[in-house]
Length: 247
Ligand SMILES: [Zn+2]
Image 1 (spheres, rainbow, N blue to C red):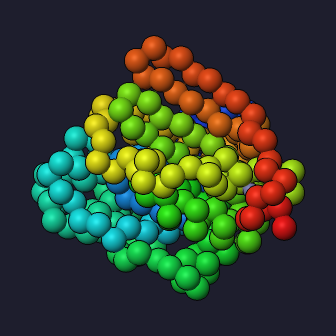
Image 2 (spheres, rainbow, N blue to C red):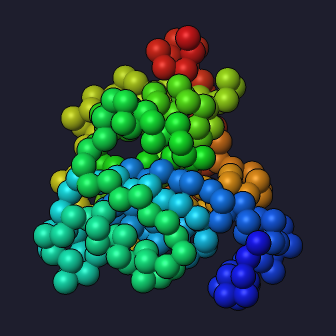
């Protein structure tokens, strides 16, 4: 049961008929795994905490650098050299002290990552490297957890949801034959608010899936062009030969 403070804190959300008390209670009970506390991870975590997601596990092994502050909005000038996860956790708790944060300041691998995926209701991928994305995708398929994937570079971004159902394609169906080196976006330019746009969309999809509201972007890729403000959404085909999801 929510207390009076919670009813007031989330009142603007609870007054949405699709959401109501039931939706808020689902959020408060939800456990979300966020991989990455950078450009996408910051808005994702802040919005999920503000919206009232009860428990966030956030994983990132990096520290805050001056060049991050242009877009990684949970970190401030005072947080330089701090672990990003620690800085993000402090921002989350300043925003919503009720949000439980499990802060992991190292790169999770193998069994440890598998365990975190298994415990989460939903996994949000906010990294900028492809090996992590492929690994997370494999674990999400294995544990049948929905994966909300996001990427942002330049003036553009994209969001996709893979729900790990037998009909839904996985991340590997989409990108298995792409050269990983070409796809790295960690050192390319990016306009500051683009990460906020994409991270906010990822948080929206996560909330929709947790509460069962609307239609998630499952099996679809949404591409956002910040220069023209064109948005394209396309269905993704499952690769019948996919080594990850078609066995
Ligand atoms: Zn696949």
